[in-house]
Image 1 (cartoon, rainbow, N blue to C red):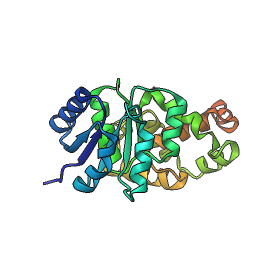
Image 2 (image 1 turned 180 degrees about the vertical axis):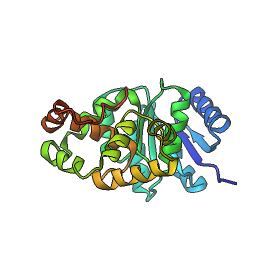
Image 3 (image 1 turned 60 degrees about the vertical axis):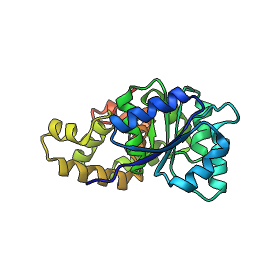
Image 4 (image 1 turned 90 degrees about the vertical axis):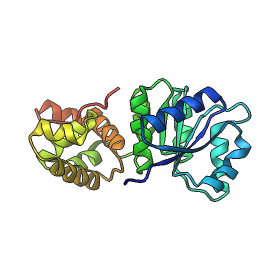
Length: 235
C-alpha cells in the first residue's frame, strides 16, 4: 500500500485550514499531520510531525509567510514549501521563488488543480498556478535566450519536439500517448530525454522554456519556416 503524503498547513484562517484539510484528505488521499495559524508554532510542529510538504499562506496576521520560511530554514529543516495565497502579484511570486519555495498556487484555483499540484510538489516538481505562468516566464528572463535556446532545441528529435509541444500545452503523459499513438512508457522516456537535454527539472519549466523560445527571434524564425514549435503555456 502506497504511503500517504504527509502535509502540514499554515494559514491563520481556521476555515481555510479546515477546508483544505478536508480537500486533501478526502479527495486527495493525503494526510494532514498538523495545521496551525500561529507562526511561532510552525517550527516546533515540524520537529514533532516531520511533514513531507508544508502548504503556507503568504499573508499571516502576525507576520508574512516568507518570514516563517526563513525561521524554518534557520532551524535546519529542508521540508519543501508551497505557497497557497490570494496574491497574484509578480513581486510576491518572485520573492517566494527566490526564497526557494517549490510552488506558488492561488486560492481561487479549481480544487482538483490544487490537489494535483500539491501532490506533484511533494514528489519534487516545481508547481505554479496556470494563471501565473506568464508572470513566471517573465521572472525567468535571466535564463538562456535566443540562439542559446535554439542550440538546446536543436538537440531534440522531431518526436521529442512533438512531445514537448504537448507537455507545454499542459497535457498528461496518458493524453500525449493517445494523441501521438505511442505507449505511455515511450512518452515517459521522451519526457525524461527532453528534461535532460534542456536542463529542466519539471513540466512547469518545460512549458516556460517553450514559451520563452517561441517568443525569441530564433523561435519566431523557426515558426515562420514552418517548423513545428512548442506553444505558449496554458493560462
